[in-house]
Amino acid sequence: MGGAKRYEDLIVWQLADRIRVLAFKLTERDCFVRDLKLHSQTEDAVNSVCRNIAEGFGCKHKEFARFLEISRRSLNEVRDSFRTAQLKRYVTAPEYEPIWRLAHRLYRAYAGLIYYLRTTADPEWTNLEPKRTNRAKGSHTDSAKDPRTHPAQPARTDPAQPARTHPAQPPRTDPAQRPRTDPA
Image 1 (cartoon, rainbow, N blue to C red):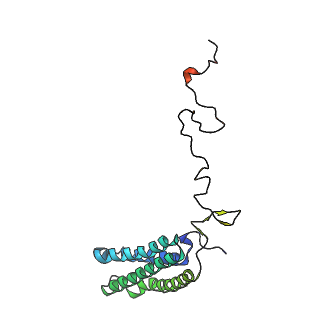
Image 2: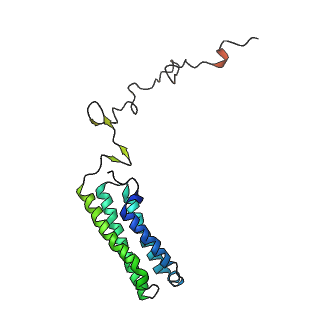
Image 3: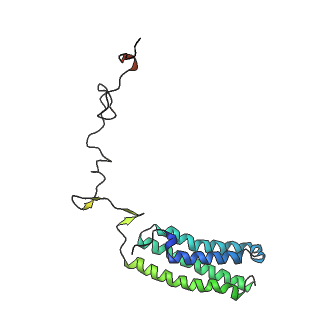
């Protein structure tokens, strides 16, 4: 079985997104909206949970694990913001409970994914493109020796020779010197 191809395939992101949807339903209440600081902090934190997962997805394992740790800290901030909202009576404990349950599932998912990332080697490819290898030697190509990036012969710079764009093309000539082919 292959790994995730998109960050949306990850269980951690799916759980985080479900928390975000539920959080937005609670933060759109008038009492929450009027508390500008708490509203802004809560929405920023819940967005940060998802954004850090998405941002880290394209990285090597060690770096992705670091982004997941940042995402987990943002989840802590979300939980604390909702504790504040409960104390201010913007939400009740039963209204917050679905977020709380998803958060505890997400903590376990973080732990499993972070463990995996820290204990397995990075894949031999990034961004779904395999590394190029020299088929004859089985080693990675050296871009200095790659004929596509460094041609074997430098471009002709002798002004006495006509410039050619391709060996199969005839040399360029002045249109006034071309023989006439139309009947006149």
